[in-house]
Image (cartoon, rainbow, N blue to C red):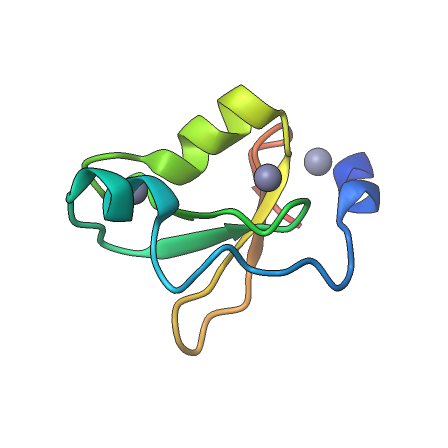
Length: 84
Ligand SMILES: [Zn+2]
Ligand SMILES: [Zn+2]
Ligand SMILES: [Zn+2]
């Protein structure tokens, strides 16, 4: 499968922080963290209450994120719904 969206990934983007932006703001807990590879937004996974990484995709349109859990390096394209 060819994912066209990896072209939108920016190099050298600064990560927004060490935790989910919205969870830190709202005081909620996350399970796992995902980083948007277009803008560096850190959000929480779909197992978390906020699902902020997915919400970030819906509000921003940024299609590709990666896991920033220790030992994990996979990337996910929301548009293709596939590991890319
Ligand atoms: Zn894609
Ligand atoms: Zn969150
Ligand atoms: Zn983003």
